[in-house]
Image (spheres, rainbow, N blue to C red):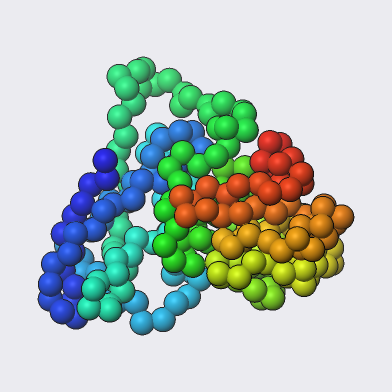
Length: 236
């Protein structure tokens, strides 16, 4: 169960409880950020991609990865970014401290995030997609250089991904534009939609070989066409 810590909002001066997240490392351990209780939270006045993520090392395998910077939305309307000092230690289960960390099994089921993120906001949809792509084996995920026709664009070496958190189904134009952009960059592409896809969109994606995933509110992307099934099975 996640630990909850008190956080005082500098705007309304009221204390709120923040549930500290636990993110899944590829080795199977949970990466839990350690909050700096001595430093005050920062008020988020504007958004910048570089400030949305922090780099933390897994306490078990020491592998570094980027994770969402912990934030708390106060009921007064203020968004707080919480200071982080490192990661919490993990229970190794009493094994040999000198032994090498266990390797996660190479199977489609093991590639799914161990701790899916419940989707409540567009930022949650992007974070859930990043966690899933990492579970598939993609690394160095960042904001794409080109802005897509809808939603948010992500990029990794050899891959372009589009995350559409809107309430309308993804259109034929959305998928075709992503495919054309990926073709110009000699990259694979994949589309994630919270509201699903129109029939002509799915037909075009099947013709072009574009994997389509539906994001449900539990934070787990579901393949909706054969190309997505293949990516979910084979990984990066």
